[in-house]
Image 1: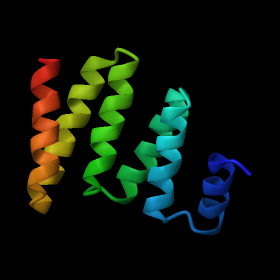
Image 2: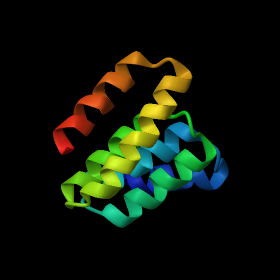
Image 3: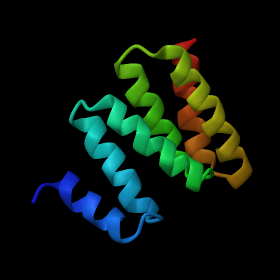
Image 4: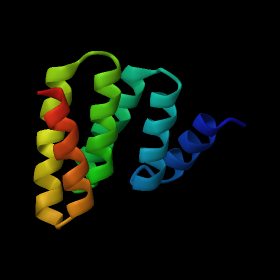
Amino acid sequence: MDRIAILTEVLAQNPNDTFARYGLAMEYSNSGKTEEALQEFAKLLAASPDYTAGYFMAAQTLTRVDRIEEARKMLQNGIAAAERTGNSHALSEMQGMLSELS
């Protein structure tokens, strides 16, 4: 069974498993399945708006397909989440990426 199938099965049992949702989004992203990845990132962030890694990796996924404006917006939302949660590492990474996209 491949990772996507395993993660899909985990999410069928527990749709609120944030780690599995993030993992599935990453598997889709790494497989070049951009739209599927972005759908999973959207579900993740809707359920867990402070999951800062989701914003950062969604922005990277968007950047790979030249959707720069969407990536900027994702980073801005992620920066707000990092500020809310006091996650200075994520804040720094996302600010750095945002400045590279400007």
